[in-house]
Image 1 (cartoon, helix red, strand yellow):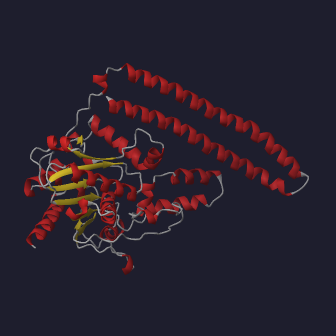
Image 2 (cartoon, helix red, strand yellow; image 1 turned 90 degrees about the vertical axis):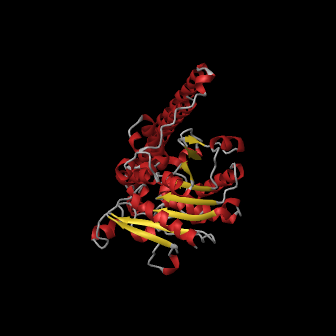
Image 3 (cartoon, helix red, strand yellow; image 1 turned 180 degrees about the vertical axis):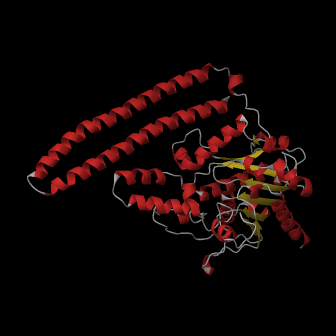
Length: 438
């Protein structure tokens, strides 16, 4: 019940924020129209004086109207805040603290209420997650570790109760943009003949790993999420019931960038978990950038440079997309790649690949949608969202390449299927077996 109350309050706050932002956008566009209309007359006297007077006569009442809308919006918001607090206070504590039953991470749970709510919340975080974080909106997912559908409390007492037979080997799964840990169960019935099977369950059964799943706000900068993940793993190592000997990070799409970022910042801060890190798997990750985000940047830049209302409005709407999405343009994983840089500048590649952590094996897995890897569609679209050169880190410029230790390219497979396809698991398993043989 507490979670539902938070979601309601978060949605309420977001709606009123949207009214505020929309009012400001309309006001700015209104001013643009007026200025463009008045400007030709302001260049020549005596028309200039008359034009200024007309503009002043227009601006004052228009400003009053827009400010009135804001005042009413804020007033209604405060009234609803008081009402929501009164309703929450009237709910008995035992009901308010009653946790929502976790829906198992299974492919046949697709379309269930939990699945729909989780995906809607994650999609919202993907698009406006940095804004939600800045506003401290209750819909901000933050970042947490999960197991068995529940958020883990990273204390010794809680983890000892959660893992009575704890394994010393941990595998951490990090989903991609706008997704949740449900991603790892995609098409499980079709691929494995069992809706509950995913890479985590297979690694647990075959090699004794304990699978943990990250859920996070994918709209924040990748580097911010990398730091957060490193902090969570520090807490995990400290609170885990037994000494953790081995950690795997397995990231799908954006998750691979977050994994690489976490390893970099963990090494930089000499975090204890990094010494236990053995492998990083980047599955369908846009290590050199995603073509869709590049195309969006080109379009918004073009629109922004055409000084008409019909182009400025869509340009501003497009540029309101989250920092996390913009990081995918070139595969940013470090703070230094975006700090002090105009995020909407036209195709400004400031990527500076983070150095790898010594002793850790980095593996990429990529795909093409065509069975023939040389087919033009496969070359052009890759797995539909990420092209093979990006996933494999093979930049045309040798100094900008990402030196993966190993990798594999599947043909006839799409971006999402990479997250739970049995052939992908075989590659992961072979990489781990090869490391054990050394």
